[in-house]
Amino acid sequence: MTEENYEVEGRKTAHDIYKCPGCGSNLSFDPASQSLKCTYCGYEEALSGVHSDEEHDFANAELSKWTSHEAHQARCQNCGANVIIDPNVLSLNCPFCDTPMVVSTEEIEGLKPDRVIPFLITNQVAQENYRKWLKKRFMAPHKVKKEIPNPTMNSVYVPTWTFDAFVVAGYKGRLGKRYTKTVNGKTVTETRYFSISGTVQRQVDDCLVCSGQKMDQKELSKIEPYHTNEAYIYDNRYLSGHTTEHYSLELKDGWKVAQGIIEKQLEAQILAQYDYDVVDYLNVYPKYDNIKYKYVILPAWLCRYLYNHKTFRFVVNGETGKVSGKFPISPVKVSIIAFFIIAAIVLVLWACFKG
Image 1 (cartoon, one colour):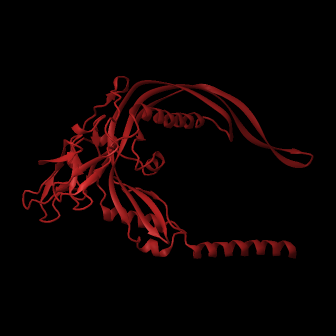
Image 2 (cartoon, one colour):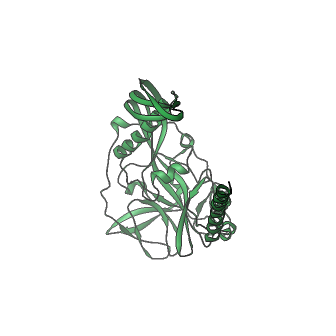
Image 3 (cartoon, helix red, strand yellow):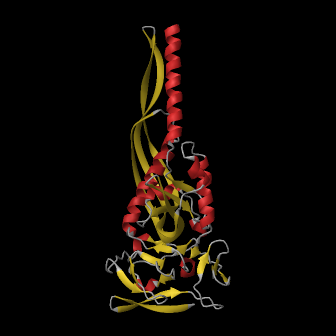
């Protein structure tokens, strides 16, 4: 490993560039071989991650904030280009010569990542998984199902907070059960309400909160799970050749998001105990104990393509290959479905008229 220096607004900052000992080219982390790999001579340096169960006490957390400028200007040592770097980015490739640059974590304000889940899914597998996903979407055009038009594939390590806690929650609510009865010869449906109350408890393990800007919580939840309990101790060699975002959502705000997720889980746990059709109201009063956290960066493919002058985005879990996203709708298929719906309505009306 060699360390190169880059001029950043009048001061020095360190970036790690991993050089091939065989030909001197840049090494990037390769998901297929789980190694630092040279694309020119084929040299590989295997990486073996180290696991850890260590987590941090939330009550004693160091809640630090970014103090750096909105952007840095770095000079690439490989080609000499001046590159604008967002302060929330931990690694990237030079857009001119594709040199992988990993920002030294000592130069970043805030908390250092505790864990990393390396990429296991390659660019090619991510695209193939999206095509398989598209094949199950009847309304997608056949042309796109067969071949994604010029996709832009970005491998990004997404910053997340994970939270553990033991929670005990009291609750009160009012649920309703529908029933039918006959009134003046007609069947009517009514609802019989009943009150509920009690206490539930739950051991929360690694509640996942997205803390970056390249992906939101909704997108992240759609490609879960990530096996965060099996993540490796942070090692920036896994970042080489991939974009890595630092958190923008502070830890204490992440915990607020986690509480909202946990409370929805508690509501589902409570309601699963009852036979009901309607929720009139349900109030839950959680108390949290032994709150722990860690800062984990997760692999994801953030992808987009242009079809009929519209941009469609899809995301792929870089560990499991799970897909979520948008897709174009075929006008021909819409017309066919509309035709059959209209035909069915006409046949029903005709049958009623004949009857």
